[in-house]
Length: 238
Image 1 (cartoon, helix red, strand yellow):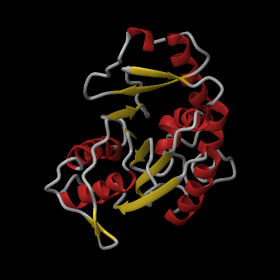
Image 2 (cartoon, helix red, strand yellow; image 1 turned 180 degrees about the horizontal axis):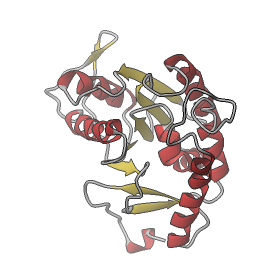
Image 3 (tube, one colour; image 1 turned 180 degrees about the vertical axis):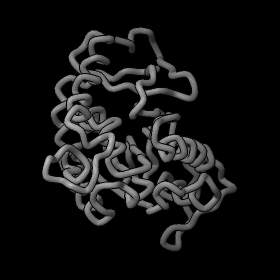
Image 4 (spheres, helix red, strand yellow; image 1 turned 30 degrees about the horizontal axis):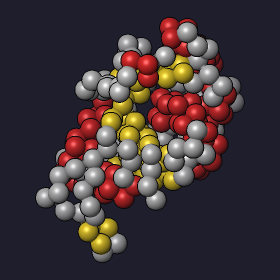
C-alpha cells in the first residue's frame, strides 16, 4: 500500500493531538494516510502499554487511517542511532509516503524533540540507495518523502504553515479522547499529568480557534518546517 501521508509520533496520541484534524480533512479529500508510533507509551503515568494499544487502534478507526504501525522503541530512552533509523526507513520504504508529518522540533517532553530529529534523519537516509533494507526476504527500493512537516505540541511555537481545519475539529477531539486513560476523569486515581486536567481538553479547541482566527477561518492546525515551504503559484496560498 502506498500512502500519501505518513504521520509519525513518539507516543500513541501525539499524532491525534498534533495533527488529527489535518489528517481527518485529507482523508475526507481522498488521501491515503497512515500512522507510525515510535513507542508504546509505556512510561505514561496513566494506563499501560496494553491499554494504549487498544486506544490507538480505536483512534485510528475514528480518523479513518488506512494503516497504523508501532516499532516499539523504548519510551523515554530511545536514541537517534542506526538501529532506530533503519526501523523507520523500513516503514518509509514500505509505504512510500509523499509527505511525512512528525513531532515538534522542540517541546516539553524530551521524546518529542528526539522523535522529530530521528524521523527527519530517517526520511533523508531512506533516499540513499546504498543503505540496504530487506523486509520479508525482499530488498526495498530507496524512497525519500517530498516534504516533512512538524506539528505543534505542548509549546506554543509560531507556525510556518497553518492548515484550515474548519469542520474537522470534532473528529480530531473524538480521536484524541479515544485515549480515555490519558485525559480528564475525576474517577481516575492514577495521578495527575499535564494533559489530564479539564483545562487541557478546553485548550485543544481554543488553540485551534486562535490559529483559525489568524488565517481568517474558524479552526486551524499549525506546522513548522526545516526547509522553505514552496508553492507553484502565489494563488496556491489562501
